Amino acid sequence: MKGHELNDEIRYLQAQAYFKIIKKFLLKYPNIKFKPQNGRSNFNLRRRPQDSEININKTIKSQFNLLRICDNELYPAFFKYKKKIYILKSYKIN
Image (tube, rainbow, N blue to C red; front, side, top):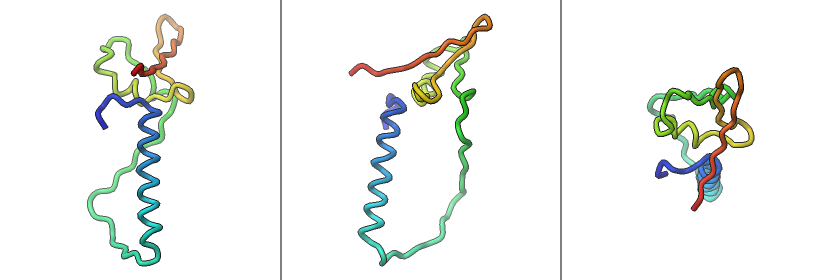
């Protein structure tokens, strides 16, 4: 990825990678040699609505990665100002 992809593009690329892995598995099945995983495992927490909050005291540039991974429908970016909540949605124009 190049760093400019928005959530829907990221999800599309992720799905394509899954399909590629599944196809590779099915082509080799049942002649698959399993091996134990090496290296450290990781665990990513589930995103919650509060994970999409933008800090109005920081620049857009410093928060761009947060803006681009927010789902405009399920968990849009937002900020709070004077006891009100404002939603931000981002779209790319080609």
